[in-house]
Amino acid sequence: MNELSSVEYGLKQSHKHQAIFLVLNGLTAAWIVGSLGSALIGPAFAIAALQGICAFRFTKRGSTIGIRAGQVAYLMSSTILGLMGIVWLMNGIMLDAILVMILAGLGIIRVQRMEHPDYKQWYSGGAAALAHLRYTTENEVLASCPSCGSLLGIVLEKLLASDTCPHCSDPLVPSAHNESE
Image (cartoon, rainbow, N blue to C red):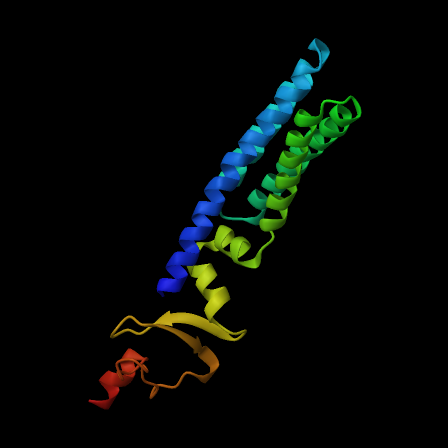
């Protein structure tokens, strides 16, 4: 189970970084749009508000709606940053263009990372869902031994009252122990 703990820790860290960069990308995109002229300050605030809503929804794990909100926010900010990079590149503002295009590209990479099966499973169901994805086959469920607490993959249709834990050799069905006495 140590492997699962380290995977979960890595996914938590990834999620934390995703949320931080989601906000930073959105603020950068809003700042760039707002700096283009006073007529675009309203749309810049709208972009910032939408990014904030998406980032807030993304930080609240539990369903794929949050992942989709994060992806929409990244796509929106990456599009704005990429377009500005192209405009600046055409106007000879090379360093700024390259930096915002890199930021736009990193946003797209983050969108793709959110589609990883481990991340999606952890995001929607936590460590238990991740363990189920990684350690069970199609018909198995995760269960713990009532005696020693070992995590086991069990096929419920095949579980017999006489089955024992491979770790402690106690019955997996507690009532089976009582019936045999």
